[in-house]
Length: 298
Image (cartoon, rainbow, N blue to C red; front, side):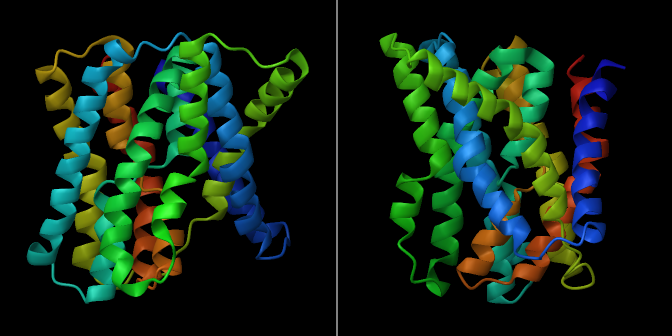
């Protein structure tokens, strides 16, 4: 019942986004702009506000970060293995390679907050700041042959990374924002999760469901079942427990980020197949995420 109270509202908001895109008559370019607003303003505000008010213990978080780095590397290896296990054209492979390790931060933050409150948000915030650069570098390097973008600048100036680094710095230094600015960030934070989940739903696309089925299902299976199992084993081996154990397995079990589709399109990869993987992983995670949470005793 506890898991249902957390998961069901999250996926209802995602379905609301699907419905709004289909029936609200908004212009098609509204949703990419809303996604940009959430990604560059609302979510950074949530990460900075949470981490700057939380007593961050990087020493205690180091084993969690080690587990995250190892399962991320495992996902990258599994993504690369698809080149030999599942044959696909180069542009399809370079786009779908990232399915094995990219994660949806919006869904993760919503669940982490529901599970452990500010402690869960702080733990996943640290992980996001640590993992996003790794995921971006791996995905961009695979797609780089199709792109002329300044990808290094995009990684270094990623708003989630900047917000996480800023929040941790404020926490470690004992700094505090002026009261009115702090209140403003708190208000932005409250809007970030519902808006982010609605945008996830609006971004789901059906293209590519009937193409490259082997590649499609390989990536989704790895992301929802294989990677969290690897994270679970690593977390046990490193002796993680409590909030750090829950959050690192949760991060591994999250559906594929919609950013993966945006990046593939922007860098010349095949967008249709990765769009289908994002949609399938998001919908199927409504079943697999509760399973992993129940296995963790939540």
